[in-house]
Length: 359
Image (cartoon, rainbow, N blue to C red):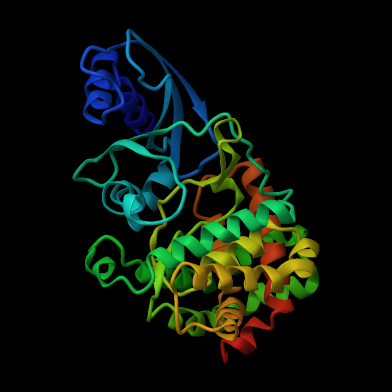
């Protein structure tokens, strides 16, 4: 059934329909038409599928390619998307939020979702050619600084905006409460699969998660800004469109409102090697704080930023442990989740996160 969902959705993106959609988006002139479409799967996403559509166009200055994002073909991932509202969040992000915030994401030409919250389609700006950095390898300082600047822009441009609280699709604390509730049942299963990536002290941090999860969940009760929710290298493209765009942030399926510093902590903890993070961590947190101030945030000190960062350093493990046993298992996925867990546990220890949470 799931294979049919994506296959049938892709099949509806015919030459005539793409012509209609791209004309409506202003990407094709009234006399231009799509005459041929070639599709190729791209990306490594586990929650949805992306296809690059290469288009032949009769005339005008329309795009030569667009990216179609469609439902996953994996039943487990489809069920998780349904339970968390993942597809709805990303469609609504492009429909209602993207144009109002100061972060570089692909422009959206078309966004639609069915009433069941499962069938959806996005037509997005093709950011290629671009450089993807392997999540498992991690990125260098220069690229980390680019990402930190985007995190600050995302937070600052949505800081304490009351209208965001009125969007009924944005609340997501229930998702994290659900993930935290799974910890007692899944922690040992996680360790059975991933203990080989962890040092003994990291294993103890993972085993302590259920005890400290409540204190971390309490930090979500007074959100300050938008929270991407999966702010790591697999969801970032560098040197996009041949270098015209330094970095673009993709995959907005986990978007919600959250505390300051949570995307920052998740990125530094999952997408930098432990050595790079340890060497540059405080400077990157300070850079984030300066970015907030430069973009208009007041009443939030450097000490506030550091305290929030220490508390939010738990987020990598809070996501990795339950999610890794709830999505389609792949060889790369196992390596990614194991590496993320190792880095996240090291981050928690380095920042004495349990003490910062008062738990």
